[in-house]
Length: 84
Image (cartoon, rainbow, N blue to C red):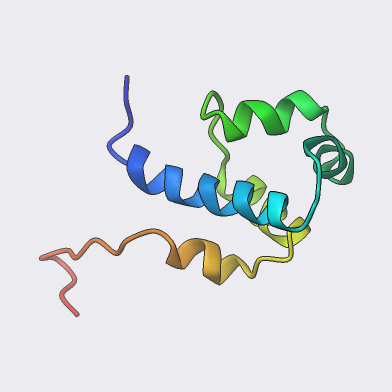
């Protein structure tokens, strides 16, 4: 089953991956910092495993990304129940 949020999720994963690479951090180094195996980072970056919100915040902090920046990568959906 494909998530209706797959495109938004990919924006966040792309932010994590490009930041990791631009800072010269290997998947192994990031995994070690998170206390996870390298395969965890590979699986996340390949879209084979989704991160929950806590994991996303921890990953953004490890990469030096303010969690708000990560969250703001997700396009805002407007609700008729809660108009701006």
